[in-house]
Length: 250
Image (tube, rainbow, N blue to C red):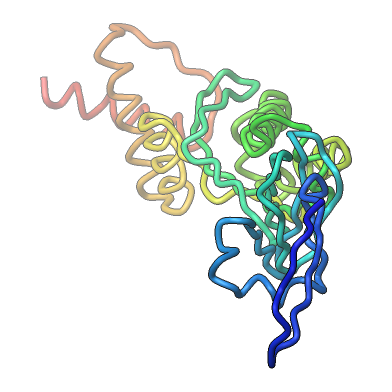
């Protein structure tokens, strides 16, 4: 209790009694906070338009704060506000090594976009963003490990669709809404890339295909002294011609 006496003057004096054990400052008192003498008596938190705030008293959750400015007394209660960004966010997974069903290790760049819809659930999960990253890793491995490389390259679009569907099954557990998921790049080992490039060139150029065929036949002839030929077709003709050429050279 405070008792005091004051001279009557030209200015009217008003007095407000506050209980700082209740840390939230009444908005009606906000105009008084501009007084420089009160600068060390309170603190504030500014929750942006794209955020929600989690209000804690002595580390105990109280409520969700909508966008706005909130003032709190510096008293016996420790007040903290954890802000959660509600805008669309993105997980960038780069150079992730994954093995296909036919035991080929490749690297993949993958993206996933999401929004937080339950800030309180997010607060319950330690290292929330890292946990989302791990979930994405597991779902990708689940899919890639069940398909062969040629299947994987033929249906890249289906990878994103599968991953997004599986992630959406876990949305409520993480307090988010998964929006999009997709493959940016698939990076093959050097030797696999060379094989695929050669196969593509030969498929597009029949002359190159024939030359490669003859190259293999010549290698076979170098290893074998006597060959019995059966069957027909272009391969047989090339082999006969190749053997005749070898005899002429000798």
